[in-house]
Length: 159
Image (tube, rainbow, N blue to C red; front, side, top):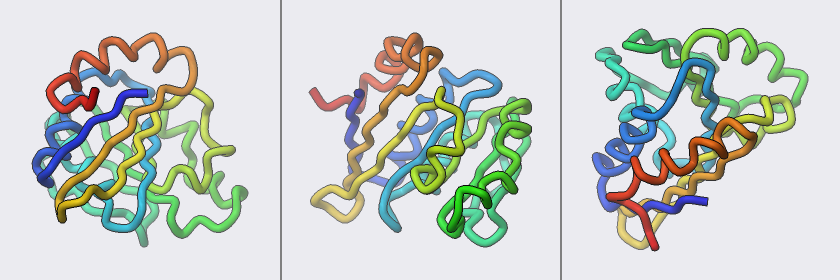
């Protein structure tokens, strides 16, 4: 596990940009955290790094947004998904064929997601904008890239 800390929203976005620098087509990122923890801010920084210039907003009611940049960014929100069968409606396998996919509240549908993913747990810190981000690689692809990810995140790492 890699643990990072930030103390501003822009810091959280910068961490996300560092993660975006190491992703490849087909990657899945599972974002976990309480309301207001910074999952959408993370996605904004991530998408910006991949050349998305339109506003990135939470897809809580639409369930999915797609953004075009140097790589397609699929942004899903599973907050309102109440049953695993509903996760099939999100067409995640098809999304993984085109770009990189980030799923907010992904822990709600974890059994329906591919085993190979990067889980990012964002928790609130002591200050208003303090955040702790825990990165856990699941599956061989992300485990093999963990050293590269750790190097990319070195500025924010908690040791």
